[in-house]
Structure formats: structure tokens, C-alpha cells
Image 1 (cartoon, rainbow, N blue to C red):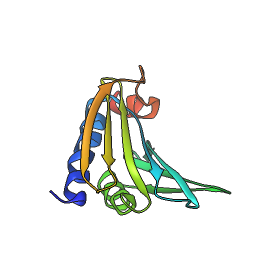
Image 2: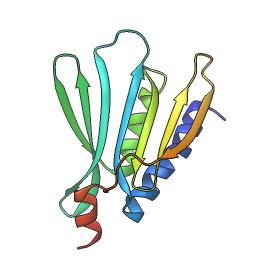
Image 3: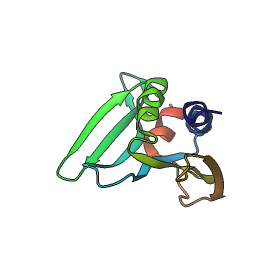
Length: 129
């Protein structure tokens, strides 16, 4: 399975957690080398009544924000796996899911105990409207 295919599989868990109201946040981290882009944080927002993803790019000197549909966010984020990020972590209220590339670029997806007890407030408000 390619890196793109495996990331899309990982992102299906993101979409599921958004649908069932357990999504807390998504973070892309562990860069290769010294890069200007340090992290990307994804969180749900509601724009014109539609659930979307806000992508916050954390650079060494500044931050930039983009807003995309749920599927478009996946297409944007996959471009940053292996260039420069080696991992993505999905935090949900049920579990944390880590997508990781090792030095040989082999993919592992591991589930651990949840870090967050509460889902995104924006998401919960959207689902309960």
C-alpha cells in the first residue's frame, strides 16, 4: 500500500470521528530536517452551515490558516506526509490514532488510549443543531 493510500485510510478515521462526534483534533508533526513549517493543526469549523476543516500552518515565524471541505483537507494534508512530516495524530474521545513513517518510509498506524475527554465544541454544536 502506498503512502497516499495508507494516509487516505487513516483519514477515513478522521471522517468517522467527525461523523460520530468524537473528533478532538488532528496534528501533523515530526518534520524531516530543519523546516520552516513546524506543524499543521486541523480542526472542524462551520462555515455557512457546512462542516469544514480549518488547517492552521504553524511556521517558525508566523501562522497561516486555510479552510477546506472535509475531503479537500485530506487532499491537501496528504501532500505534507513525507514532505516534511513523518507523523499525523488523530485525537478522539475514544482513542488516539498515530500515522507514522519510519526512516525506510514504512507506514504504521497505531491506536493508543485517548488523550482528550471532550470532542471539539464546534463539532458538537454542529451535530446537535
